[in-house]
Length: 305
Image (cartoon, rainbow, N blue to C red; front, side):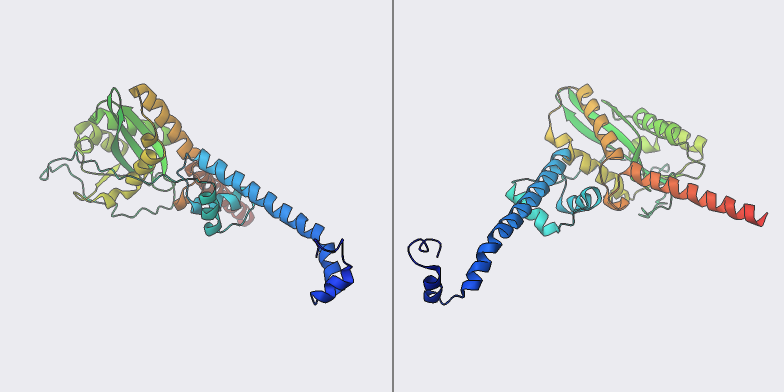
């Protein structure tokens, strides 16, 4: 009708098309409003694309739709379905890097009487910090040669509480990482530390530290990576999100990058086990809850007194 109304009357065109003139008038009046709504929808879509793109860049193409959905809701108050997020990621050609598995095979002899029992028994859910830790060693390739990374992780928050990196996979490497964790956290006696049966974890130097601090050792069954799945998962994330995405010229360059990653992992990286809070945020919530509980208890004691 818009093409022919300059040559024919509107009433005649409406009759020919069996259309009420009032309907055509309403349509014309609704055009600006419709254009306004379309513009608003496009603006919202552009805003969503910007948020998704920034998150993918911050996570270096390692964040998936589920965590993006949580972040959009928590940080930007946007309710978006995972399906729509996946559609936008495809439209923006944003790719997610997949994981590669690692398994440390440097283990003690089968009949070594220093191998501890599996006390942890895959009970990864903990009620508070410094009750159960897990530890392991992984390797990182550089142009200078291999670098070895030992980490200790608190099962409550999945926080890396101590770590060390060196070109030698020795008992001293594990001891250094453990001492850093102990001096940083100062846990009470009775802490359980779970590891695999690696020779570093049955060494005299390592076991002496456990004995001095009143720590109970626990070890995975031979060849069963699921017994220490939490630390395996951390190494998989580290490799996928950082190590496999670059080539390190020197050990020092790898050290700086791993240091930056662990800081980011502890303070900013969302973790599904922590309701998508970072390990530090999750621990801070626990600390606040304990302080509130102490205040309530003190208030009750004062009233009874």
